[in-house]
Image 1 (tube, rainbow, N blue to C red):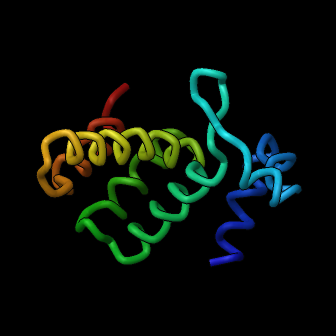
Image 2: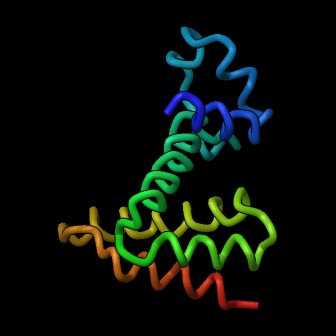
Length: 116
């Protein structure tokens, strides 16, 4: 897991200052309104997508991410698009009080993979 995390950290040099001082980072408030992305949340989402793909759960996510990565020419860029789909699925689940809809999530990733 540490190796996987270090690879994604390497892809995000903009987070290096936040991650260099662990105590300060843990005290930081990352507000989107201030143009700050929470590096811990962002990197956790990369790891989540990696894990989903490694076990193909929900079923079909591995292929959908591979197709999107091929379409974008970058696994990193594909992950960022998948994060949007993942976030939408979680938001919809929280809002509705229903379990996350894995089929809708994969459909959203597939639509991005086939969109121009």
